[in-house]
Length: 544
Image (tube, rainbow, N blue to C red; front, top):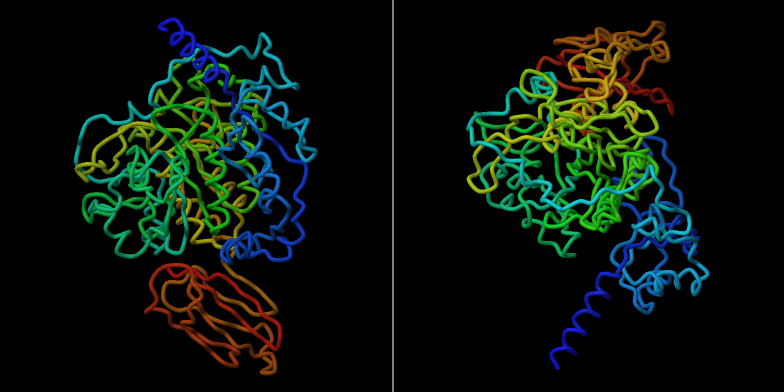
């Protein structure tokens, strides 16, 4: 009997070990025309407005995975369906290799199968240049915390000259940020996040790992990350976008490293897109897995190989900015950034210390196809975060924190220039960085200067001439002039000044030449709309 039990245990262990992860890619979306005709069944109005503002058309990538296909895959013998992606039209499954291979044979709608262990895929074999190293999993966040030093986060924003945005009133208001991470314990109770809660700035969230709404749990890494953007303890700690609104998504299971986390990340990014999120912060990266057969090589960091990278690139094409930590492998044998930071359009963030010196742990670029990574740098060594237990500020290390420091300032900068596209915003930030003309493998383009980016972006609107009508000076301290080139009264225009949120602040009928006093206005960005008949023009006006 003992031998029989031993044999059964052995056979069971073989069966468990034989379970493979794979992505099943589907050929089409039969319901696409129905969804495309009813876009609000796919995306919220806010998401559609973001697309319209950036002239991004809807396409079949926005259409959900066909339900009938998903149900057939889910019900197939020996198959467990774990996640799905509308962007990539794919379903993540687990099962024995033979059962997974049968999907291609049995279902005509299956286009191809990619195994996480690419030695099993028909398209790939393990070559000398792509041998995977054995890897013993360690909690990727276990070395984040260092000593407790109470204080404030002043240097974190001043290094980037981001405080100038705050001084002008750009603090993230009406910007929506999704934080994709490993958990958010005590965000619902800590004093540092009370302002977010009281002002309803936490818009929702989801735990994709456990498939439930209890996102205020699991690993504290997400709490620390969120604090660098949104925490507020007056006089002690203020995040880089304290007035932004947030979605909190858990996709990372800190106790293990498995390919499913990539698929859950893509699901979360798709959710963020559908909700109209502007900026995603992802302080996560993937290189090696508990099963070394799934681990990546440097060759795979080419911006088009890993599932998460392909998903992230599509996410940026939808009009969002995805800010991702470059990784903490600079001092290790791996050395390079992880996925999805290798994606061409993902904004990858390295780390420096308080004096701007590169952190030795900050991961290197370039990508394996020769592109500059990281994009830019922010404070990430001995950086302040809010402790998830005490609620006080303490120091920590990692590009996990330089990423949210940067993400918050990016949100404020985009708030200042809402008419710019995501790609334009990222490029202006790169151009403001101190190594833009001479990037290095670890620094990328260096440390951005948001004051410089702001001023240079404004310079194109110093004097705005539209339809023979001028606004000057711009920026303005107290009074600006509306002046027609042609003084004929028949050319008079109606002028309305709006806040960036669309609130009407001043309305002037039949303006010909007018000095407007806006001394009472707060510093910040305003929109001046001029109308004549059915013709409308809008110019941005900056109040210093």
